[in-house]
Length: 417
Image (cartoon, rainbow, N blue to C red; front, side, top):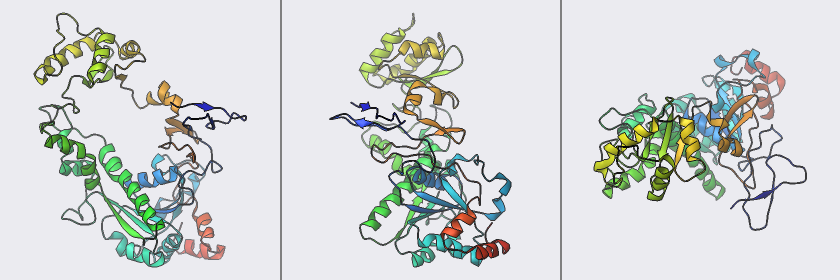
């Protein structure tokens, strides 16, 4: 059970624990004066990329790390400074624009690395080595550095030098094979499974693990985070179910892949959908009671016999088409029927549960997902909106000890912008 007691100031997200209780703090959405977060003091250098690398950097920034993103000078637009960049993956950091191909630009990056805890890069294998900011270069100036590398195929293997995208990585792991309807083609599951689940999240976990080792006395090291490796790990349970004879290789015929009629989505009278996840018998019984299943002349067939699943699915589909999505949601009410409305992107933030937990928050005028997970003692915050490339170049170079005339010279030589 969780309980809180408001403090005298009534400040949002603050609570004093009642004796014997666990406190859940809400997410404070303020500015740079917000609580520091569990990764306060961690310094991260991010070489600009797209997708999973920036997501890993965002996760670290959300948790309190000081992240400096190294952008390309060609992306700089001073007229945009002071306004939030639309790419929310870049939130929480500052940006310095550096030409990595120039010797002076390389020295700027190594100066950043000298006092950093970790570096994140997402280039193809060998690119940072050719630029002079590879692992050997960076560890030479900072032996305690954790060098995080984000790729799809990994740093070695036959496919390592090849281009690729989320869908191809899923295809080679077997995961894509299992996603889709029975007898139909595999369906791309957005890029949440590969880029962000198997990629960026695994890189963040790897970096924090390596940092723990460093703080326990180990030397710095390279973290090789490959999306194919991460997705394979995410599919461990399916491999286990296969070994236990509880999972069939054809897609769309299993308990969790849309094969079971009590774990699926159904169209309603208004063309919108409900999601049914009544796996356990007692939850299924509650769903049956709440919905009045089945409609005559359909029969309440034994759900535990897969041979009945096609007929049960047709019966459930016929029933759900008799009411709108929201009518079914209201009918299920606050129960264990495990029925939920399928909300669209705009509807989700307004759902009462999402609103109560502040799962989505507004920062710098933009509604967006809040940092996760939650911490009772070191609450997280959104401190900075996404920067425009080069918005903090002078500020960051000054922190590194560059005098104004040297900064002017670097800009004149197009080493920074």
